[in-house]
Image 1 (cartoon, rainbow, N blue to C red):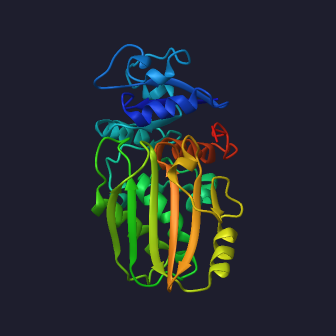
Image 2 (cartoon, one colour):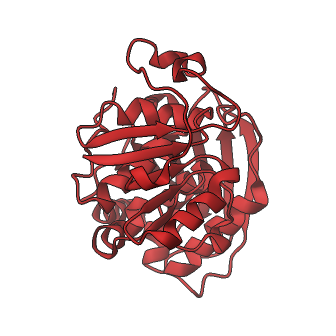
Image 3 (tube, rainbow, N blue to C red):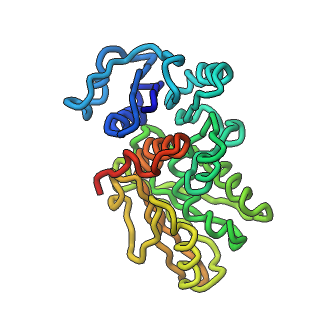
Length: 297
């Protein structure tokens, strides 16, 4: 069993983590801390009523092997704990660091799975949900140096995080990862926002120049994601409602008038946040990728 602590226990992400971890066969949640809440977690996360008797407590870092950090105010605490314990691992979900400044391992499992399994990183930075949806659409092209010109993105965002997306931060994240695959990529990333149809689903529609015919592009994407457990290329139209309460990303490709239109849909709280964090935990501790993530379809 993995002994786990969670900071920022009052946040919606922490609530999702607890929901996943209390049903995970290899997880033992030792404590959940909060600077603003006390008493039972179910006072805040009512969806856990009848399933969880945990109470908010102090962050006892010496008692755990892994901390999920959901509170930017606790990032210095996690940094100090990492410096003093080379066996501790921290999965960062608080967005307290930018992608470049964060260091450690970028926790997009579809691109860094082997590193997380073999290099046992102590610090993993979970991507923003919006950047993840876009990057899962772009990485197969960038990996094959087929990404040409500008990238135009429309993000149909939701209000589950109670704030608007930080467009500049997401652009930086997308560009940094894209250039890690293709250092010669010189295009711009243009992002516009639209309101989404669901409270927790996220849809990104990405438009780039089509560098090949649709059958060749689908073959490329299917080959890239062939041995991945959560990202799938589908031939029909996809909507964010299709992936609610799952840890899946569905991708649909259409070529029209010289443009490749990629639609990527995820559950922002699961695949885009807490579910991806549990996926990263599974990799770090040598568990099956899908452990604890066989969720409602």
